[in-house]
Image: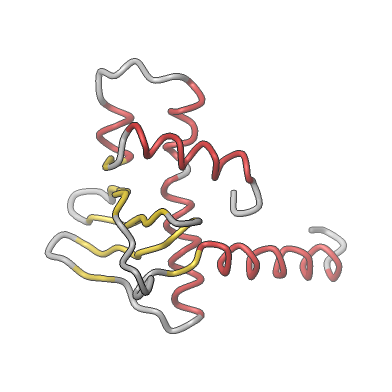
Length: 130
């Protein structure tokens, strides 16, 4: 997903129509969603887990609230809060948010992508089963 520019383009367009959504509410709502949208919304969990892994490896901490936590990421000049709420089950959410002028507190998505691609390349080159 981090290498898939098609997904990132879809994500940007999707959040223009739905600037705030959860995987749970979108997937269980009565909206007549296209099959592609349903599949891509399911990847919100993987997106969060990838951001979380990158953040932990770089000593970046999530923003906490009373229901869970989230990371602020930016892709181009668009800000997002990608997070998880906890309760009876984990629910992943996304909010499209404005970016402050100095882009403070936002993780650059391209940095995450570069690291993930380097790891994938190393694994592919050093693992006969990868």
